[in-house]
Image (cartoon, rainbow, N blue to C red; front, side, top):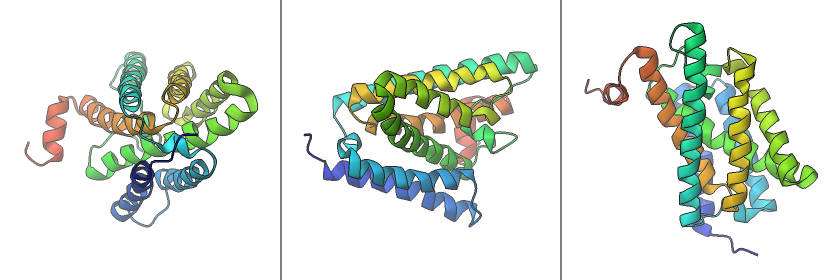
Length: 223
């Protein structure tokens, strides 16, 4: 059995608790969907710590590799869905989890924190809790398919055309196999969080008709 890394446990716990806490402080006490995700993520983290603690471990180059692959997968999925939706709608459209909560993608510290929170929490809830349970019942392949369908169903509000829901379904299935490849979800989850943050900046620029660098400079108040 793989030894549990105390530093990995501390790091994952810190992110799991800090992201929703900071978001609640900035957003206010009102419970919204993002904060609900944060609460579920804490429960998922505890579940993994008890049932499969090795999934929380940083696995060196393997975690770095899955991080990189997942970033590429997320960008490909996000840009594909956004491009198709934009062409059909005749205007720029942002296809990412934030679209479920906002009519437009406004890039602020609060929405950026929301994107980071959602990405990390989704991975713990779907890649950790849901996939772990469905995997035990249906096996790796069946569990990945079932988790992908569940993930797609939860993202229906963000997609203007139902067939585009294939993008998050396929992405989630690939992420499940990346979890198997890594033997955990450290790299996959971190990539999901960072990827959602970068996609928010990129999509925010798309909606405003400016470049990514201009969005970042504006966020820092220097443009």
